[in-house]
Image (cartoon, rainbow, N blue to C red; front, side):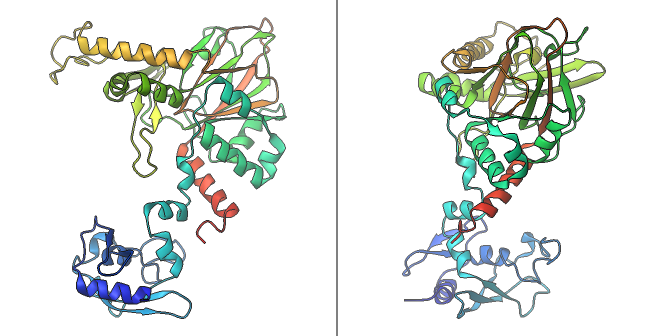
Amino acid sequence: MLGAASKLLQSAVKRPPQSVLGCWYSTSPFPGKTLNPLFLRDSCFCSRCIDSSTSQKLFETADIPLEINIKSAQDNADGSTTIEWQNDISGYNNHTSTYPSQFFKDNDNPTSRKKATFNDKFSLRTLWNRDTMASRSSAIEYSGFINDPAVLFHALIRFQELGLVFLSNVPSEPDSINRIANRIGPIRNTFYGPVWDVRAVPSAKNVAYTASSLGFHMDLLYMENPPGLQFLHCLRASEKGGESLFSDTFYACESMKRKSNDQFHVLQQFPVTYWYKNDGVNYQHTKPVVEGHSSVFERPYEAVNWAPPFQAPFSVGTGSGSSDHSQCYDPYNSSLKTYIKAAKTFKQFIEDPASVYETKMEAGTCAIFNNRRIVHARRGFEDREGKRWLRGCYVDTDAFASRLRTLLEEFTPSATQ
């Protein structure tokens, strides 16, 4: 049987280098897959190519000559393979690259690559309705979340799967939410501040700061990059009412696709503008209800945008079928009607009682939910003494993903074995 080095060398001699986009090709007459020399050279992690202190590249991918090839390849006793390069980057004379055997296993196919880079869990999703969430809503102890990395790991995996987790026995202290959020990543500062209080106040600048009911929505969609994680810690509950409601928009998306894929497609295309213009700020951003596609994680969509209280009037020309925005906007245009029909259907799926998980958050409870997936709402409440007090904050999705990857590496050390 030919070793890795022999296969690499013979493939390099028999076949010209592939384009930079062709990272994978089947060898012939050798079975299996052989890695492109361009890919191999770009992946070199020797001390001449990767700074030992910063772990950053010391060359640029665009500097690799398209004519680069394998001059020689040697299988080593430890299972690694050493390659000497021909037509290498300028300044890299007599350069060799050594790849452990695990490197070839990790890069055998896209699935093994995602596992090796600790990205395989980001495809983990369980879509839920009321009954599913009721069976999975057991709270995670605050003390374990704060002090035990294994409990934190379990919590983040559940969050990735469901988009909603609860913590119990959280100390009724104003800075408890800071400790919770910082276990995952840095708190995101917004015009509300790093941490904000949800209390009924006179002349409120946001409906959340009243005792009225609050419809299903997501936060800060008027920003280009809304926060990914939202935290709500109940320090004191209301006397009557104030129940929290949650609904999984990804579950609604799948339900809608089954009922009317055409309407779902409308939600992926039609632009909706969100804004917040109050108290000296003016935020605006336009995006479709269903946003993004991830070929990396093999998901049909990445996020949902749904915040009726913060929706602006449609932009002039929206739904007119014309790119000429100077034309007078027709509010009865058929395209807008098509969108409203689709939005009505989506709203029905979100608000279907069988889809809504309802809970009365008592003091000491903290909800953590995915602001790009889960819509939240609140029933009106009576609070004559101004007792009800929740504190909230945000953490970005990138910070969550980074924390989960580090925990995956810590608790699944054999992931690439």
